Amino acid sequence: MFMGMGDGKRGFELLNMILSEGSLEILEVAKDGEPKHFTDFRELVNSRTGKVFSPNTISTRLKELVDAGALERIIAKTKREREVVGYKITPAGLRALEISYRYEEELQTALETER
Image 1 (tube, one colour):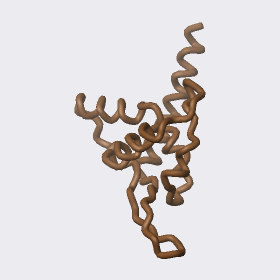
Image 2 (tube, rainbow, N blue to C red):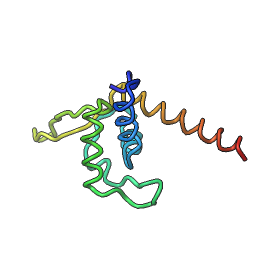
Image 3 (cartoon, rainbow, N blue to C red):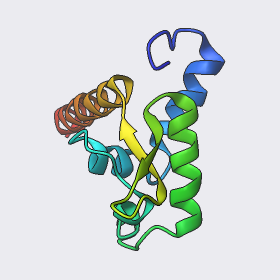
Image 4 (cartoon, rainbow, N blue to C red):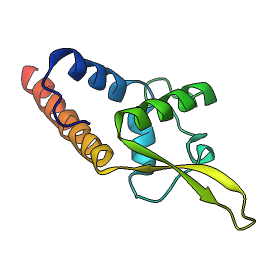
């Protein structure tokens, strides 16, 4: 879904979602490809404020990232055969994270050039 962001409105929707507080942090935690659970994201710290994200924010971002195709929602079984919800990064999610790294580097370069 991240590919084909050419049509203006849809592109900005995806850009706004991926730049929403918590989205990149969630993708960063998930980038190892192993399924993650809600508890894996509970201690995420907002790099802008230094505060831990609220459970509500994390839940909202997980849903948005699944809807966008950056994360896959999976059902896994525990050793006791209990079903738990997990999240796994998709190739599109990895690509979005890689693009964010490049943009960060380009922005730093651009801002340093302006000084």
